[in-house]
Amino acid sequence: MPGAVGLGIVDSFAMLTPLITADLPYHGPEIAYLENGANGLIAPNSTQAFAGAVVRYLHDAGLRSRLRQGCERARRLYTVENMAARFSDGILRALGREQAQ
Image (cartoon, rainbow, N blue to C red; front, top):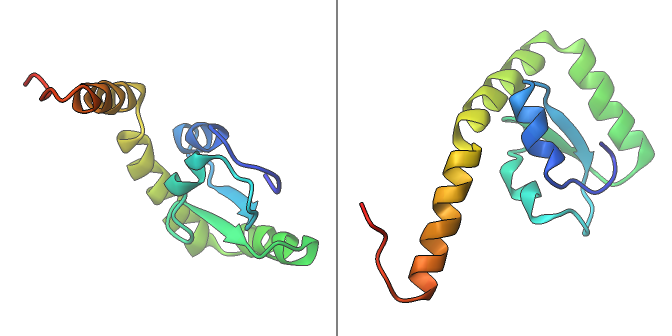
C-alpha cells in the first residue's frame, strides 16, 4: 500500500499479511500501529525504495516470518473490543470519571 494508510493496516494484521508502505506525511493516525521491521515495512518515499522493500520482503523468508509474527501480536492487540474499551475509557476520562472495573 504505497499510498496513505488508514484502517487497512488492521486488516493486514488480521490476515497476517504485513503491510508495506512509503514514508508519507499524510497517513492516517493508524500508521502508528505499524512497527517498521516488526509487523510491516515503511520504505522511504520513492518508487524505487518502495519496490526494493517489496522485493526484499518477497525474497527474505526470515523477514516474512518475523513480520507475520508481528502481525499475529498486533492482531491480538488491535481488536474491536480493545479499541471500544479505549474509546469508552477516553470518554470517561474526558468527563472526569474513572473507568468502571
